[in-house]
Length: 133
Image (cartoon, rainbow, N blue to C red; front, side, top):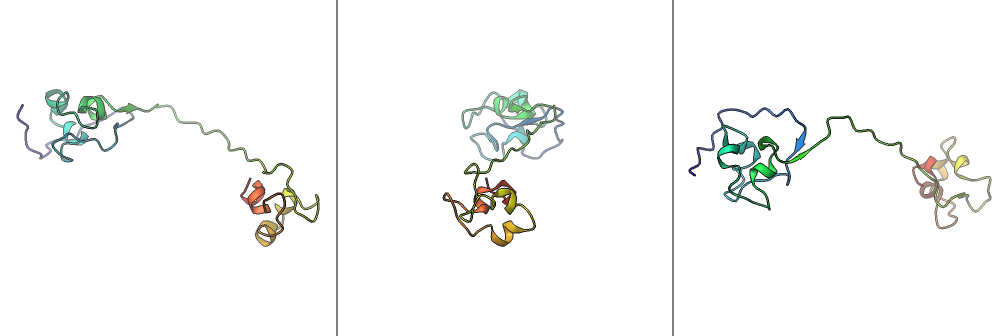
């Protein structure tokens, strides 16, 4: 098939959520022949099954041609981040009273959190309240 010019005449409209795969795909003739180029003027239908690159044709790689990887339209729910003090039950060498809860108050992480190592860690490394854990 003979290809038309590289000049776009229209912009494709894509209603589904999708990611081109592989991202940044273009055909073997160069980066100008990418998913955006194929998504115009019926090029997917005319050339989309030809010119494989990176293991895929435009039909397979490009969202604009019906390929790519569809993303869920549902909003993603991020599970809460659960932090654990590590090592568990950490306290500084001056005793159990100087634990992560103690360091987490009154700016003590900033003032003392890098001092007083115990069990191989300081409060800043061991305590969630100090940004560690």
